[in-house]
Image 1 (cartoon, one colour):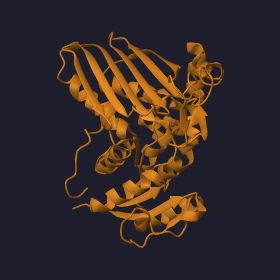
Image 2: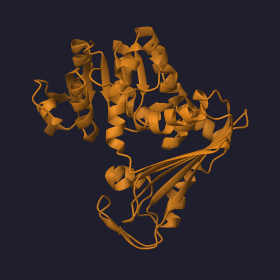
Image 3: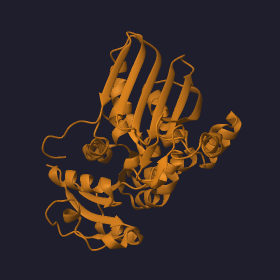
Length: 352
């Protein structure tokens, strides 16, 4: 029975689940790192609501030296959403030949948004014989769930996906990035204008590593690759969300006026050489009292199929997927390997 040695990098909300889930699945937490000084010296087990495990949270500045000493089987990275923001820690893992898995949404399929860093990481991982991947909620609910439904479909014309989340749950930086609290004029200038660019300019930004993809940008790339489709073009459009009444936002510390932006919808449209379209929409906003998280996908073809999941426990589902994926990452070929090239994520009853 394998008992993996796991390091947790980033001790925030997600880590409380990933640490506990690793321990409950019979493996060991052998290191934990964060940038918050108030957490230094705290037992990682206690932090996750478990019994003490004798492993204290350390300063993230020491991570390279400590990883070389600890030599874990894998590092779980739960920090940022953009691939370039994880460059330092992922390159450290690749340099040391240590596997890593991250909740970073862009890392799910960064080949179509930051290929320069993706290929750099892939080359270093192959050289030092380790694997790095991105996983989480999207791996199952925006990825393998859809490809499984496609496996029961004779022909596909179009795939439509729509998911929503409350920006109140994720902090002020994310809420502001979604344009929450802006007037429609401000939204158009500060948010929507980012994607009002030519295909050539978008390609330049992607190749330079400076493009800002919505969560669905990488999902569409993952789906196309998983289904054997060749992408001909892909575009993204940000649209403001509004509500008929004023909404209070504790995260922003303000009341959003009726008709102002409560957040945004990012619509990604992918056209393929095979004629199949993938159109996905990711909605992040301050919720009205009657709104809740949802996940809805439709495959249009023969036959049409729709699946709807309301009120998914996104944090827990993300963290469980990360932990269940550990054996797949360890067993995978070296490189930056996206999960459509791995087995479908499966439930681990007792041990990893």
